[in-house]
Image (cartoon, rainbow, N blue to C red):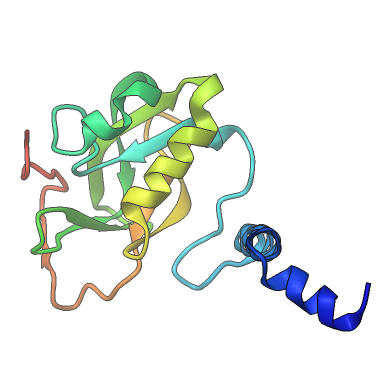
Length: 167
């Protein structure tokens, strides 16, 4: 194979697909190891099967039907942190130690659907939220999605209960 034909092979649909696959794997591996100062990266572990939700993905809310098929059980619970009204029809949370709590649900995911559920949640929350590990008052280690933007301009929700955007 000549250098010219080798270059042409990479420009073919198969070559482009191979490059895209390698790039996707690299992004995934990097995402597993990168963390920022907004909160801890979510390690692989038992909390993969549990999500803490506090907004539009709670049962009986707007986006719950998008993830309901992955949920084995939904249990009311709370975590420490502060809840804000984003002004865009969904809440924003910062999970911090302190006296304030955020009301929500722990969703126990169906074991055979954990990967699909996590992918769907990441698609729903992408760009505005990041995954963090939380421990609920009920003692469950779970993944939650924390607002990545500043909260200076957002209105705090004093009681920690999101009641907007119900379906």
